[in-house]
Amino acid sequence: MDAKARAEVALLRDLGLTKESVVVEFGAGTGQFTIEVAPACAEVIAVDVSPLMLDQLAGKAKAAKLGNISVARAGFLTYKHAGRPADFIYSRFALHHLPDFWKAMAFARMRRMIRPGGVLRLWDVVYNFSPSKAEEEIEAWCATGGDEVEGEWSRAELEEHVRDEHSTFTWILEPMMQHTGFEIIDAEHSDDGIFAEYLLRALT
Image (cartoon, rainbow, N blue to C red; front, side):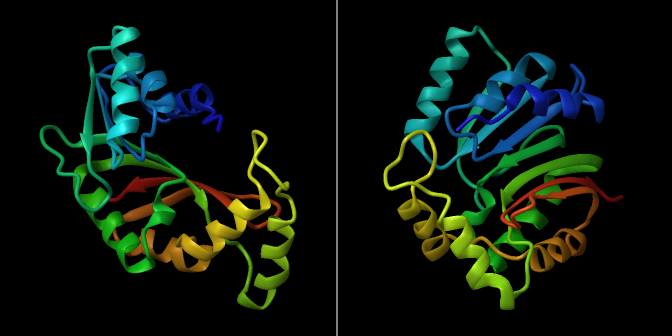
């Protein structure tokens, strides 16, 4: 999946990302964002639970001669940040792996590792509709999937996400952010009510 990494780095630059910034990415995968942001910051820590993904990312970093990338095999609940507090935390389509209680704990942990005024950029599947609309909205989303995977998601994969992952509602997730020390400075919800993009600032 295209992570739109170049545009994301440009956005963070507009929010104060500099060559002195420390960036932490949760759910880094093979490193689309990590590789793109590394030349624009002092240090980027790529966090992922998959050793295979991290091996691929490390190989890309070595090939690109990027010496300011470190990798950590961990997740939202197990990563232990050391050194200077993060200026930016980035995560794209990873938080939904956690049930709601643990999402709140993840936000609390991220708040502790980011400096006051730091920015958390979060993308995820977050449902922006009421429970009374859930059946028709979820069916409409699943109907966009094909019979097979051909660059996009199949219907079976979308159904699996709804069944097995822990995507939640905006009206549950957003208070978690606020209760754990973040201010929502921007929230964009897709027209279909399935996806959300957030910019959060750590409060003092």
